[in-house]
Image (cartoon, rainbow over all chains, first blue to last red; front, side, top):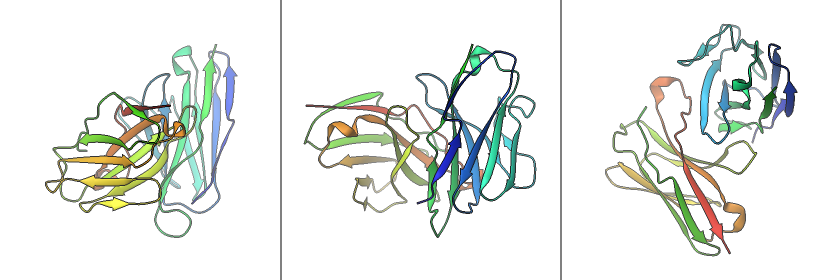
Length: 116
Length: 111
């Protein structure tokens, strides 16, 4: 199955700053997604990262707060902007594909973000 | 997306079968049932999925009722490492292949 590398694995950031999380896949994938998991909660979908165009955001998430890039079929970034303590969560990248080394959904191990 | 209902938690004795139920009474004909699990501090791990037939792989079995309104994930011989949150998810084709997670079931395997 596909291998997803997420960087950083964890970070502690000051409020008001921004953090960019990278997601690199070792093979081309059809779709890439970004999720947030707040402490003790389930996963919430933030957006679908679209190659070469603007991401598709779920209700409650906006581009100004969570800008996303996807320049090619193997890489995406999520930026958490103007952070507050409420943004402390685990952020996960997920990919979907059919055939080859990517069949179905695969998740990265996540980025654990703490905002102080 | 069809909504799923799972018990919030379950306990299972080590070595015994763990049977995790899921209700998805509003599932439509082209929606698959997926099961994932999340072990503490890790990303979700795929377990199994099915449309209407029962499925089995090296990890688990998935039993889907004939009317498709409910399913059961079976871990045949649970071990302590199977302690995790288990998510039953119905994937809607019309939403572009995204997975929407519910609250899941916390399975505690005890020795």
